Length: 279
Image (cartoon, rainbow, N blue to C red; front, side, top):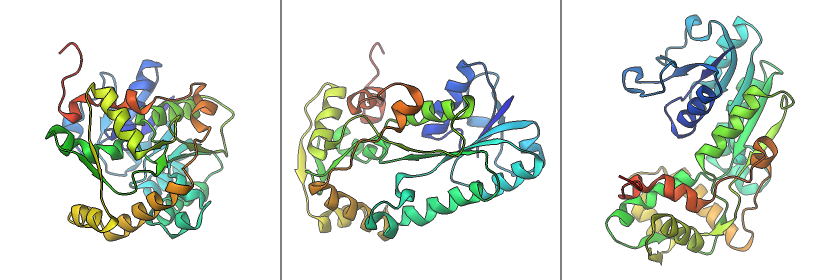
């Protein structure tokens, strides 16, 4: 069996490749820069060109959002394969803010690209990524306070390794075809608690300053498109009074509760300007 992993050098894809290799699977990994992919020995690393050679002999596919339609076309034309699709919790459209969001339309189209072509699919819908909190890395490195709006809003950030573990289960085990799995971290934490958890993981106290939505927009407008800013502010505003709940997808697939935000921070110490223990 050959498993094609698209987006293999991204945060989720890299973890997924590691998990599959450790389980003895044959992996073909797609990277925009194969020469510098730095993936485990034995992994077949290929470029991003969507050609018949890309899917030759492939039995199962992890679909990263970029290029999903082209990959689905090529794989289904070559024969029946099992797909695991990385989508977003927003694609469920459970709340009006989700249906209005840029993420909803984008990820629904990705899901449709696969589900319209085959019945052999599993959809993973993670909520807010813990990796989004790397936007706080610069002030933390500089010894400055974290600046954030709506600090009493609460979300359950998910470790990218938990998404990878869930994807590996869906790829390798039977019983998950045709299922949608909402994935979150194990705790819904206010942004105050998120800063504290990161501080605990780093072994230091971190300060947090609440700013207005307009101040946030001024801070990030050079880096984040306006539609994404609107989506984020609406999400944080509404989760002040209605915290984003913990979902069961990670334990349902992996049998484990998922990694805490404090664990995520320990795993990302280098990103916050601290050496890993023992180095």
